[in-house]
Length: 237
Image 1 (cartoon, rainbow, N blue to C red):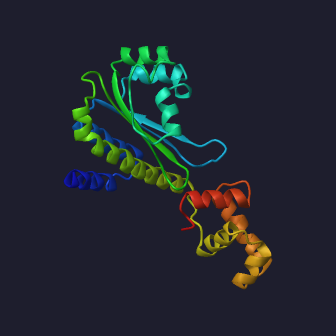
Image 2 (cartoon, rainbow, N blue to C red):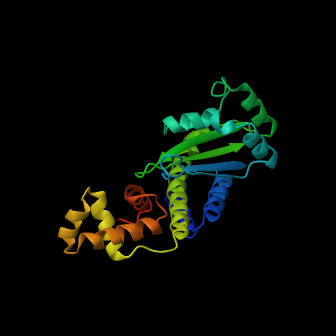
Image 3 (tube, helix red, strand yellow):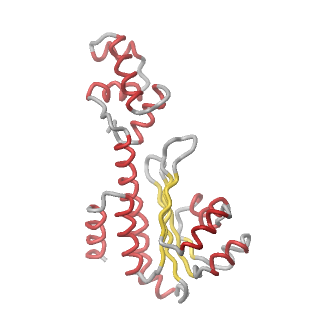
């Protein structure tokens, strides 16, 4: 387990993009005996409508059907993983209230599956699904592989969140200056412009100037939104 985990971590550290991370997940899934895998991640921002990223190697027909039927809203595995981080093994009982979904999935060869979600401190959530077309998951196989499956779910989320955060930072092409960062930190602590001016020994106008610039760079509507976005992107750490 230790060597496997170390090799996986090394591979993920050298995968800076979402696609690179998923390719590593896909390789690990195949080594664990699964033909297909999927990773979905809900970014923590924007808070009102979080960005959802979905990557998988499912058959193209199933990908199209899933989208066209709006299955993301009714998928029992997604519903479970939004509420619990306990692993879920696919079964007729799991899909009892979504028979059309289950029949469609099986028609594309998705018959045996395992899913687990992960959460991070910023409120982002990820879900790993491993599946195949045959050979039900036996207790013996689970006893042998489930620790690695848990590990894959958690490190996959860390790596994918890091890649997505990096991409979102790159979207904000104008980096914050040290003074802008410091002022946003004080804003995050609830300080007013007057209080920040006194703390930093600068004028209120200068504080407001830096807040305005930072808000513009972060493509935010106001100071509060700028502070939230900067914090979620790890720019205030």
